Amino acid sequence: MLGSEPHSRADLEAVCELARQVALAIDNARLLCEAHEVEERLTTILVMLTEAITLTDRDDRIVYANAAAAKLFHYDSPNDLTELHQFELGERFLTLTSTAPRSPTAM
Image (cartoon, rainbow, N blue to C red; front, side, top):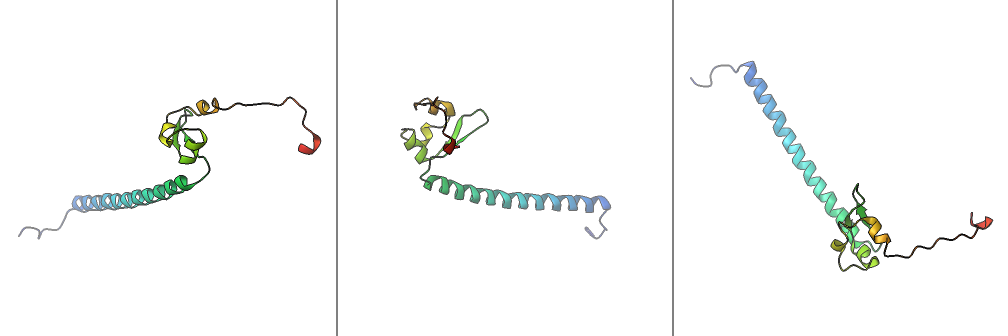
């Protein structure tokens, strides 16, 4: 009769490995779902902030800007800031430096 023979050790190991992979896939799906939920919450927070927020990559290129940042830098949309170098924004402002000595009370 088919299936009445005992399973070999190799069969048991194959089923155990399959079970481990299924458990890992389920855990990864759960973690991905949680990451998406956190991302949605953070995006909502960043959009609602009245403070200007920009995020840059390792090359100092802006990869995210909120509406407050677009307004501060006089852009129509936050997307208009993405891919700009962060120093390009600084060029839009006049920077003054003082050569006057600092007073002792300011220290």
